[in-house]
Length: 464
Image 1: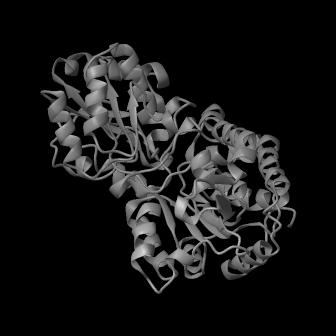
Image 2: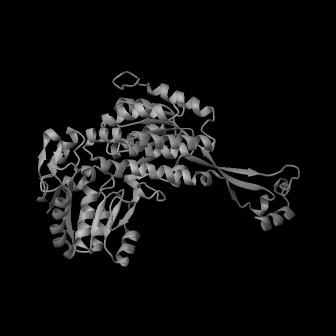
Image 3: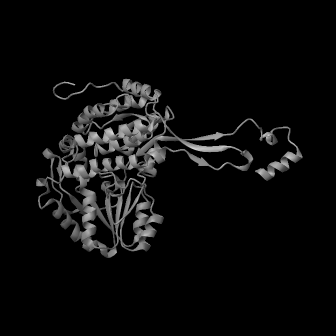
């Protein structure tokens, strides 16, 4: 490393070969080693939070407190949860053996998969790179990390820090753009974990098929918020916070709102008020409001601004990649803003006559990563859970389920496959291997051997 804090870029093939050799040593298998690496990762976060927050501010305009809440705290809680439960997760579990095979013992044995590839996105570039790594390390794997080049300050810092804190024979981090990702995907892995958009997810899945590599895809989609009844001020604040956190660049953020019947009028009043409460009359001057990641996404998002009537916001500034928190009404359901994942600070609000119509609207479209219902009525909550197809359901709150380590996080259909967080991460990165043990000193299986007879058939009927 030179005085400017640069680092030597490791060729992708060399990085994979290094950690593949590290896995062959079985160094990652003992629980003590796994715990040591997880604690080292926790130290990385604790000792470098200021620098990481500065990098996130440079890449995405994030306030340090927002980075603490949405990136660092989630990782710290995840590590603590895993350290607490890891001894139990690593234990073999006994399984009952059928009478025909007794005496024998059957067990399920969690085993590391080997070398995993983790491809991270740019919107939460610390959390979404290191959260899957927590599960991979807990399960005893080696890993190759690829941070997003679209968050360059964060990627450079992580490429410097990861080798300082984690065993380089176990964890490698590779910097670069799409060509680097393509090089990595030509290598053989034992599992690939990808977070990002549907289009690239398809490419990852296709590349993985060459080696029959299992894949976890954490994608996105148009997550709806359906509003029926409740405290309008609280509802508006929770929707506005969920939507405009990280300038709307959150995979589980409400992508659009369906307001049922008489809920439309109060929500139209309270949403703009909530935005002003959070960011003031001039959000461009607010230190609490982020920026769009790059010019390409800025131009894509500003194209949506004319696809409805602006109820609140609508301003933008190209030089600062700033788009004002915007609420659109009178939106055509067939407009591009309602067909494509927005992934930015633009919130269409559509009116529907009933909860049944709202559910039908959601289910006519690809399954989202999350679906949110705002109603205090248990009957409506039950109907929503039973009829809406989504990766997760939230009642009266947005974006919060990823903060619960015991809940699986993942999509369904177009929003992804597989899940992680807590025990689900451990299982995702483990082979749950069956083991059956039976002594050969006495052969109790002779009744199943040829030649078959009437007496054997009668005995086997009773045993099986």
